[in-house]
Length: 122
Image (cartoon, rainbow, N blue to C red; front, side, top):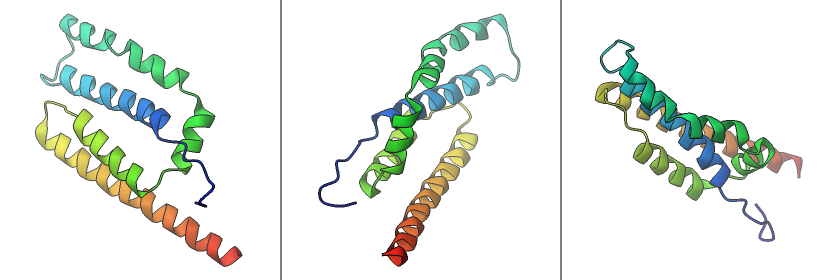
């Protein structure tokens, strides 16, 4: 990124990730006992705002922010995910967090590869 570039931030990315994480949290809570009951409807209804956030997020802005993510923002997203993601199944949660950590590392490698290829074009 050049010195004159303006950072776009990650607020739209966080909105989308936060909504997806909350969906996962509620799903984990509802599936804790392995059965779906009438009592499970209330947590599902609370997802309405998260579903709305996913649908309403400006996809172009979010995509631009995602492509603009730097190392500091990737680390911030990693912390954000680990703080927000909390399902009752601790063993599964740990595995998912490991997978997300790997995914963030792969994203970082992807950005490094992009910069490497761009360096050849100059």
